[in-house]
Image 1 (cartoon, helix red, strand yellow):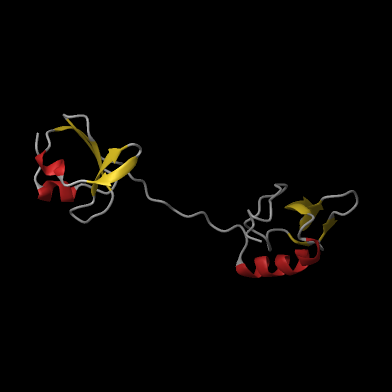
Image 2 (tube, helix red, strand yellow):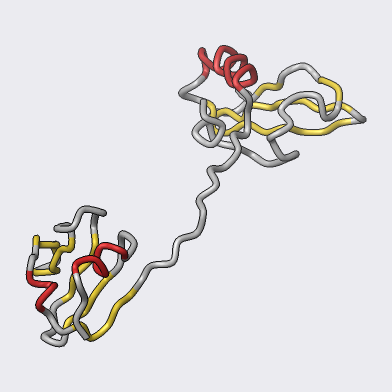
Length: 143
């Protein structure tokens, strides 16, 4: 089977084409010349795909990427960043805990006796994106 330039351009980016001569091509861009031939583990420009006999076509399937919702809102990040600033290099993780109808945030630090917590707040009113009793790294919280 042979394809026209128009047919080649209609394939989505990431489509792979294998020729009868053992060559492999991939569409890297939507411009007409952006089919690349695989040689020695890198993609080379190629104009020879139009004249090639096509053996197989692999069209990629894409799923919609939905970015994860941030765990903390901007005010929570700002507040926690200010609180941890003096101990930032010693904090291993941060967790939200529940106690008698209230919640609190606890900071687990390296070294014995260095961990600390914030005052209690009403259940479900703050740090809503944090799961109870799950320890988060500073990176996970965006701090």
